[in-house]
Image (cartoon, rainbow, N blue to C red; front, side, top):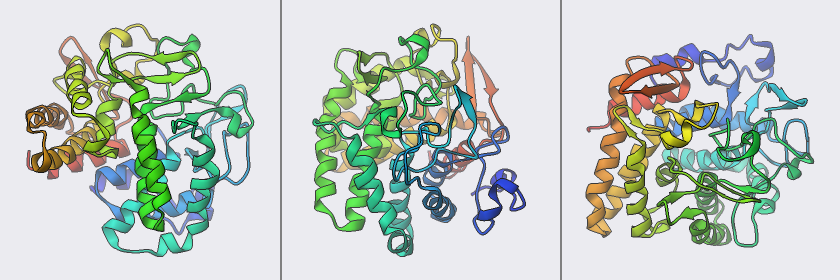
Length: 381
Protein backbone atom coordinates (compact mmCIF):
# COMPACT_ATOMS: atom_id res chain seq x y z
CA UNK A 1 0.00 0.00 0.00
CA UNK A 2 1.00 3.64 -0.18
CA UNK A 3 3.57 4.86 2.31
CA UNK A 4 0.85 6.89 4.06
CA UNK A 5 -0.11 3.70 5.90
CA UNK A 6 3.20 3.94 7.78
CA UNK A 7 1.74 6.93 9.62
CA UNK A 8 -1.00 4.64 10.94
CA UNK A 9 1.10 1.65 11.98
CA UNK A 10 0.68 0.73 15.63
CA UNK A 11 4.14 0.95 17.24
CA UNK A 12 5.38 -2.31 18.74
CA UNK A 13 6.17 -0.53 22.04
CA UNK A 14 2.50 0.41 22.53
CA UNK A 15 1.64 -1.32 25.85
CA UNK A 16 -1.82 -2.27 24.62
CA UNK A 17 -0.29 -4.18 21.72
CA UNK A 18 2.95 -5.45 23.27
CA UNK A 19 1.76 -9.06 23.12
CA UNK A 20 1.24 -8.70 19.37
CA UNK A 21 4.55 -7.09 18.44
CA UNK A 22 5.19 -9.87 15.90
CA UNK A 23 2.29 -8.56 13.79
CA UNK A 24 2.14 -5.55 11.48
CA UNK A 25 -1.07 -3.83 12.53
CA UNK A 26 -2.68 -0.50 11.64
CA UNK A 27 -4.83 1.99 13.45
CA UNK A 28 -7.96 3.24 11.72
CA UNK A 29 -6.76 6.82 11.39
CA UNK A 30 -4.96 9.75 12.91
CA UNK A 31 -7.85 10.28 15.33
CA UNK A 32 -8.33 6.59 16.08
CA UNK A 33 -5.25 4.97 17.67
CA UNK A 34 -7.05 1.64 18.10
CA UNK A 35 -7.21 -1.27 15.69
CA UNK A 36 -10.61 -1.73 14.02
CA UNK A 37 -11.21 -5.07 12.28
CA UNK A 38 -13.67 -3.56 9.84
CA UNK A 39 -11.37 -0.74 8.72
CA UNK A 40 -8.26 -2.87 8.36
CA UNK A 41 -9.92 -5.75 6.50
CA UNK A 42 -11.88 -3.54 4.13
CA UNK A 43 -8.76 -1.46 3.47
CA UNK A 44 -6.90 -4.61 2.48
CA UNK A 45 -9.75 -5.71 0.22
CA UNK A 46 -10.03 -2.29 -1.42
CA UNK A 47 -6.29 -2.09 -2.05
CA UNK A 48 -6.04 -5.76 -3.11
CA UNK A 49 -3.27 -6.28 -0.57
CA UNK A 50 -3.34 -9.84 0.84
CA UNK A 51 -0.06 -9.28 2.70
CA UNK A 52 -1.49 -6.39 4.68
CA UNK A 53 -4.52 -8.54 5.44
CA UNK A 54 -2.58 -11.56 6.67
CA UNK A 55 -1.43 -10.09 9.99
CA UNK A 56 -4.83 -8.49 10.61
CA UNK A 57 -6.52 -11.86 10.08
CA UNK A 58 -4.11 -13.54 12.51
CA UNK A 59 -4.76 -10.76 15.04
CA UNK A 60 -8.48 -11.33 14.65
CA UNK A 61 -8.09 -15.03 15.34
CA UNK A 62 -6.09 -14.30 18.48
CA UNK A 63 -8.80 -11.98 19.81
CA UNK A 64 -11.75 -14.12 18.73
CA UNK A 65 -14.31 -14.32 21.54
CA UNK A 66 -15.17 -17.58 23.27
CA UNK A 67 -17.86 -16.58 25.78
CA UNK A 68 -20.66 -14.05 26.12
CA UNK A 69 -19.86 -10.64 27.56
CA UNK A 70 -22.80 -8.20 27.86
CA UNK A 71 -20.44 -5.25 28.34
CA UNK A 72 -18.36 -5.71 25.17
CA UNK A 73 -21.03 -7.36 23.03
CA UNK A 74 -18.88 -10.49 22.75
CA UNK A 75 -20.55 -13.65 21.52
CA UNK A 76 -18.95 -17.08 21.09
CA UNK A 77 -16.56 -17.03 18.12
CA UNK A 78 -17.29 -13.41 17.17
CA UNK A 79 -14.38 -11.32 15.93
CA UNK A 80 -13.43 -8.05 17.56
CA UNK A 81 -14.57 -4.64 16.42
CA UNK A 82 -12.19 -2.30 18.28
CA UNK A 83 -9.06 -2.99 20.31
CA UNK A 84 -8.48 -1.53 22.82
CA UNK A 85 -12.18 -0.93 23.36
CA UNK A 86 -13.81 2.32 24.44
CA UNK A 87 -16.71 2.71 26.88
CA UNK A 88 -19.55 4.58 25.14
CA UNK A 89 -22.64 4.44 27.38
CA UNK A 90 -24.01 2.67 30.44
CA UNK A 91 -20.69 0.90 31.02
CA UNK A 92 -20.90 -0.78 27.60
CA UNK A 93 -17.76 -0.86 25.47
CA UNK A 94 -17.07 -1.24 21.77
CA UNK A 95 -14.89 -4.35 21.88
CA UNK A 96 -17.20 -6.65 19.90
CA UNK A 97 -20.03 -4.25 19.03
CA UNK A 98 -20.12 -4.88 15.28
CA UNK A 99 -22.32 -7.31 13.40
CA UNK A 100 -20.33 -7.39 10.16
CA UNK A 101 -16.75 -8.06 11.26
CA UNK A 102 -17.15 -11.83 11.52
CA UNK A 103 -18.30 -11.85 7.88
CA UNK A 104 -15.39 -9.60 6.89
CA UNK A 105 -12.88 -11.84 8.68
CA UNK A 106 -14.14 -14.86 6.74
CA UNK A 107 -14.24 -12.87 3.49
CA UNK A 108 -10.66 -11.76 4.13
CA UNK A 109 -9.51 -15.34 4.71
CA UNK A 110 -11.07 -16.53 1.45
CA UNK A 111 -9.59 -13.56 -0.42
CA UNK A 112 -6.13 -14.17 1.06
CA UNK A 113 -6.18 -17.77 -0.11
CA UNK A 114 -7.37 -16.86 -3.62
CA UNK A 115 -4.71 -14.16 -3.94
CA UNK A 116 -1.77 -16.13 -2.56
CA UNK A 117 -2.63 -19.85 -2.70
CA UNK A 118 -1.38 -20.05 0.91
CA UNK A 119 -3.50 -22.48 2.95
CA UNK A 120 -1.54 -22.04 6.19
CA UNK A 121 -4.10 -19.73 7.79
CA UNK A 122 -6.93 -22.09 6.90
CA UNK A 123 -5.08 -25.12 8.26
CA UNK A 124 -3.86 -23.44 11.45
CA UNK A 125 -7.10 -21.68 12.32
CA UNK A 126 -9.64 -24.18 11.02
CA UNK A 127 -11.36 -24.54 14.45
CA UNK A 128 -11.73 -20.72 14.59
CA UNK A 129 -13.33 -20.68 11.15
CA UNK A 130 -15.71 -23.57 11.85
CA UNK A 131 -16.61 -22.00 15.20
CA UNK A 132 -17.40 -18.66 13.54
CA UNK A 133 -19.80 -20.39 11.16
CA UNK A 134 -21.47 -22.83 13.55
CA UNK A 135 -21.41 -20.91 16.82
CA UNK A 136 -21.81 -17.34 15.59
CA UNK A 137 -23.46 -17.21 12.15
CA UNK A 138 -25.93 -20.08 12.39
CA UNK A 139 -27.60 -18.88 15.63
CA UNK A 140 -28.16 -15.46 14.02
CA UNK A 141 -30.09 -16.87 11.04
CA UNK A 142 -33.87 -16.62 11.19
CA UNK A 143 -36.18 -19.28 9.79
CA UNK A 144 -36.28 -17.34 6.51
CA UNK A 145 -32.47 -17.00 6.38
CA UNK A 146 -32.14 -13.37 7.39
CA UNK A 147 -29.09 -12.52 9.49
CA UNK A 148 -30.55 -10.99 12.66
CA UNK A 149 -28.60 -8.80 15.05
CA UNK A 150 -29.63 -8.85 18.70
CA UNK A 151 -27.72 -8.02 21.90
CA UNK A 152 -29.35 -11.07 23.51
CA UNK A 153 -26.61 -13.17 21.91
CA UNK A 154 -24.11 -11.45 24.20
CA UNK A 155 -26.43 -11.60 27.22
CA UNK A 156 -27.29 -7.90 27.00
CA UNK A 157 -30.24 -5.69 26.09
CA UNK A 158 -28.21 -3.05 24.18
CA UNK A 159 -24.86 -2.54 22.51
CA UNK A 160 -22.46 0.30 23.17
CA UNK A 161 -23.26 1.59 19.67
CA UNK A 162 -26.70 2.52 18.36
CA UNK A 163 -26.18 0.33 15.30
CA UNK A 164 -23.65 -2.42 14.74
CA UNK A 165 -23.26 -2.26 10.96
CA UNK A 166 -20.69 0.17 9.57
CA UNK A 167 -23.19 3.06 9.69
CA UNK A 168 -23.12 2.83 13.45
CA UNK A 169 -24.00 6.37 14.49
CA UNK A 170 -27.80 6.54 14.30
CA UNK A 171 -30.94 5.15 12.68
CA UNK A 172 -33.37 7.74 11.29
CA UNK A 173 -36.96 7.37 12.42
CA UNK A 174 -36.16 5.48 15.62
CA UNK A 175 -36.22 6.96 19.15
CA UNK A 176 -32.72 8.06 20.09
CA UNK A 177 -31.51 6.59 16.80
CA UNK A 178 -31.51 2.98 18.08
CA UNK A 179 -33.21 0.08 16.31
CA UNK A 180 -35.71 -2.25 17.99
CA UNK A 181 -34.08 -5.67 18.20
CA UNK A 182 -33.93 -8.12 16.58
CA UNK A 183 -32.82 -6.16 13.54
CA UNK A 184 -31.67 -7.03 10.03
CA UNK A 185 -29.24 -4.79 8.16
CA UNK A 186 -29.22 -5.37 4.37
CA UNK A 187 -25.51 -4.83 3.84
CA UNK A 188 -24.41 -7.37 6.49
CA UNK A 189 -26.92 -9.79 4.93
CA UNK A 190 -24.94 -9.46 1.70
CA UNK A 191 -21.62 -9.73 3.53
CA UNK A 192 -22.63 -12.99 5.20
CA UNK A 193 -23.75 -14.39 1.86
CA UNK A 194 -20.27 -13.79 0.47
CA UNK A 195 -18.66 -15.03 3.69
CA UNK A 196 -20.51 -18.36 3.57
CA UNK A 197 -19.87 -18.83 -0.13
CA UNK A 198 -16.15 -18.22 0.31
CA UNK A 199 -15.89 -20.33 3.45
CA UNK A 200 -17.90 -23.11 1.83
CA UNK A 201 -15.36 -23.27 -0.98
CA UNK A 202 -12.43 -23.16 1.47
CA UNK A 203 -13.86 -26.00 3.55
CA UNK A 204 -15.32 -27.95 0.63
CA UNK A 205 -18.83 -27.58 2.09
CA UNK A 206 -21.73 -27.54 -0.36
CA UNK A 207 -24.02 -27.02 2.64
CA UNK A 208 -22.57 -23.57 3.38
CA UNK A 209 -22.91 -22.54 -0.26
CA UNK A 210 -26.51 -23.75 -0.23
CA UNK A 211 -27.27 -21.71 2.92
CA UNK A 212 -25.73 -18.65 1.27
CA UNK A 213 -28.02 -19.14 -1.72
CA UNK A 214 -31.03 -19.32 0.60
CA UNK A 215 -29.89 -16.07 2.22
CA UNK A 216 -29.63 -14.57 -1.26
CA UNK A 217 -33.24 -15.45 -2.00
CA UNK A 218 -34.23 -13.65 1.21
CA UNK A 219 -32.70 -10.38 0.01
CA UNK A 220 -36.10 -9.56 -1.48
CA UNK A 221 -37.39 -9.22 2.10
CA UNK A 222 -35.10 -6.23 2.74
CA UNK A 223 -35.63 -4.53 -0.62
CA UNK A 224 -38.01 -1.57 -0.73
CA UNK A 225 -39.89 -2.04 -4.00
CA UNK A 226 -41.52 1.38 -3.73
CA UNK A 227 -38.28 3.35 -3.26
CA UNK A 228 -36.17 0.98 -5.35
CA UNK A 229 -33.44 0.42 -2.78
CA UNK A 230 -32.70 -1.62 0.32
CA UNK A 231 -34.17 -0.72 3.71
CA UNK A 232 -31.96 1.12 6.17
CA UNK A 233 -32.93 -1.65 8.58
CA UNK A 234 -35.71 -4.11 9.21
CA UNK A 235 -36.38 -4.35 12.94
CA UNK A 236 -39.09 -5.46 15.33
CA UNK A 237 -41.23 -2.44 14.44
CA UNK A 238 -40.89 -2.98 10.70
CA UNK A 239 -38.81 -1.47 7.91
CA UNK A 240 -36.77 1.71 8.28
CA UNK A 241 -37.17 3.31 4.87
CA UNK A 242 -35.09 5.80 2.94
CA UNK A 243 -32.82 6.00 -0.06
CA UNK A 244 -29.33 5.02 1.03
CA UNK A 245 -26.09 3.63 -0.32
CA UNK A 246 -26.24 0.10 1.09
CA UNK A 247 -27.64 -1.47 -2.07
CA UNK A 248 -24.78 0.06 -4.09
CA UNK A 249 -22.26 -1.32 -1.58
CA UNK A 250 -23.84 -4.76 -1.82
CA UNK A 251 -22.57 -5.22 -5.38
CA UNK A 252 -19.06 -5.57 -3.96
CA UNK A 253 -20.13 -8.61 -1.92
CA UNK A 254 -22.74 -10.18 -4.20
CA UNK A 255 -23.02 -11.48 -7.74
CA UNK A 256 -25.38 -10.20 -10.47
CA UNK A 257 -27.54 -13.31 -10.01
CA UNK A 258 -28.34 -12.12 -6.47
CA UNK A 259 -30.28 -9.17 -7.93
CA UNK A 260 -33.09 -9.29 -10.43
CA UNK A 261 -32.34 -6.99 -13.36
CA UNK A 262 -35.26 -4.82 -12.23
CA UNK A 263 -33.85 -4.50 -8.70
CA UNK A 264 -30.45 -3.53 -10.02
CA UNK A 265 -31.92 -0.95 -12.39
CA UNK A 266 -34.15 0.49 -9.65
CA UNK A 267 -31.21 0.69 -7.23
CA UNK A 268 -29.12 2.68 -9.67
CA UNK A 269 -32.01 4.98 -10.57
CA UNK A 270 -32.99 5.67 -6.96
CA UNK A 271 -29.35 6.35 -6.06
CA UNK A 272 -29.32 9.41 -8.32
CA UNK A 273 -30.70 11.24 -5.28
CA UNK A 274 -27.38 10.52 -3.55
CA UNK A 275 -25.12 11.82 -6.33
CA UNK A 276 -22.78 14.75 -5.70
CA UNK A 277 -19.72 16.16 -7.41
CA UNK A 278 -17.61 14.11 -4.96
CA UNK A 279 -19.43 10.78 -5.30
CA UNK A 280 -22.37 9.14 -3.55
CA UNK A 281 -23.76 10.29 -0.22
CA UNK A 282 -24.63 7.57 2.30
CA UNK A 283 -28.15 8.84 2.86
CA UNK A 284 -30.92 10.84 1.20
CA UNK A 285 -30.10 14.51 1.99
CA UNK A 286 -33.70 15.11 3.04
CA UNK A 287 -33.48 12.39 5.69
CA UNK A 288 -29.98 13.43 6.70
CA UNK A 289 -31.33 16.90 7.54
CA UNK A 290 -33.65 15.35 10.14
CA UNK A 291 -30.93 13.65 12.21
CA UNK A 292 -28.52 15.26 14.63
CA UNK A 293 -25.48 13.22 13.59
CA UNK A 294 -24.63 13.45 9.88
CA UNK A 295 -21.46 11.34 10.28
CA UNK A 296 -22.84 8.50 8.17
CA UNK A 297 -24.72 10.76 5.80
CA UNK A 298 -21.65 12.21 4.06
CA UNK A 299 -19.54 11.10 1.11
CA UNK A 300 -17.06 8.45 2.26
CA UNK A 301 -14.07 7.88 -0.04
CA UNK A 302 -13.82 4.24 1.04
CA UNK A 303 -17.44 3.71 0.05
CA UNK A 304 -16.80 5.14 -3.41
CA UNK A 305 -14.03 2.59 -3.93
CA UNK A 306 -16.26 -0.28 -2.77
CA UNK A 307 -19.13 0.90 -4.99
CA UNK A 308 -16.79 1.29 -7.97
CA UNK A 309 -15.25 -2.17 -7.48
CA UNK A 310 -18.68 -3.76 -7.14
CA UNK A 311 -20.09 -2.03 -10.21
CA UNK A 312 -16.99 -2.96 -12.20
CA UNK A 313 -17.42 -6.62 -11.24
CA UNK A 314 -21.10 -6.53 -12.21
CA UNK A 315 -20.26 -4.81 -15.50
CA UNK A 316 -17.73 -7.50 -16.43
CA UNK A 317 -20.33 -10.21 -15.86
CA UNK A 318 -23.16 -8.40 -17.63
CA UNK A 319 -20.94 -7.70 -20.63
CA UNK A 320 -20.62 -11.48 -20.94
CA UNK A 321 -24.10 -12.67 -20.04
CA UNK A 322 -26.44 -9.65 -20.13
CA UNK A 323 -28.89 -8.05 -19.78
CA UNK A 324 -27.11 -5.50 -21.93
CA UNK A 325 -29.44 -2.61 -21.08
CA UNK A 326 -27.76 -2.38 -17.66
CA UNK A 327 -24.33 -1.67 -19.11
CA UNK A 328 -24.79 2.10 -19.37
CA UNK A 329 -26.29 2.27 -15.87
CA UNK A 330 -23.30 0.46 -14.32
CA UNK A 331 -20.84 2.66 -16.18
CA UNK A 332 -22.70 5.65 -14.74
CA UNK A 333 -22.28 4.28 -11.21
CA UNK A 334 -18.55 3.88 -11.78
CA UNK A 335 -18.30 7.41 -13.14
CA UNK A 336 -20.10 8.91 -10.13
CA UNK A 337 -18.03 6.96 -7.61
CA UNK A 338 -14.77 7.94 -9.31
CA UNK A 339 -15.58 11.65 -8.88
CA UNK A 340 -14.05 11.39 -5.40
CA UNK A 341 -10.57 10.95 -6.85
CA UNK A 342 -9.91 14.67 -7.37
CA UNK A 343 -10.59 15.37 -3.69
CA UNK A 344 -8.00 12.88 -2.48
CA UNK A 345 -4.86 15.02 -2.47
CA UNK A 346 -4.81 13.88 1.18
CA UNK A 347 -6.70 11.00 2.82
CA UNK A 348 -9.74 12.44 4.65
CA UNK A 349 -12.15 10.15 6.41
CA UNK A 350 -15.24 11.84 4.94
CA UNK A 351 -16.33 14.68 2.68
CA UNK A 352 -19.14 17.08 3.55
CA UNK A 353 -21.01 18.45 0.56
CA UNK A 354 -23.01 21.62 1.20
CA UNK A 355 -24.44 23.89 -1.50
CA UNK A 356 -21.95 22.65 -4.04
CA UNK A 357 -18.98 23.06 -1.69
CA UNK A 358 -16.92 20.00 -0.74
CA UNK A 359 -15.21 20.12 2.65
CA UNK A 360 -12.90 17.49 4.13
CA UNK A 361 -13.97 16.15 7.51
CA UNK A 362 -12.87 13.59 10.07
CA UNK A 363 -9.38 12.26 10.59
CA UNK A 364 -6.74 12.67 7.90
CA UNK A 365 -5.06 10.34 7.08
CA UNK A 366 -7.58 7.53 7.40
CA UNK A 367 -6.71 3.92 6.61
CA UNK A 368 -9.77 3.26 4.45
CA UNK A 369 -9.13 6.41 2.44
CA UNK A 370 -5.48 5.57 1.83
CA UNK A 371 -6.69 2.28 0.33
CA UNK A 372 -9.29 4.11 -1.77
CA UNK A 373 -6.64 6.54 -3.04
CA UNK A 374 -4.47 3.64 -4.15
CA UNK A 375 -7.41 1.93 -5.82
CA UNK A 376 -8.50 4.98 -7.81
CA UNK A 377 -4.89 5.74 -8.72
CA UNK A 378 -4.49 2.32 -10.31
CA UNK A 379 -7.76 1.97 -12.22
CA UNK A 380 -7.67 3.05 -15.88
CA UNK A 381 -10.83 5.18 -15.72
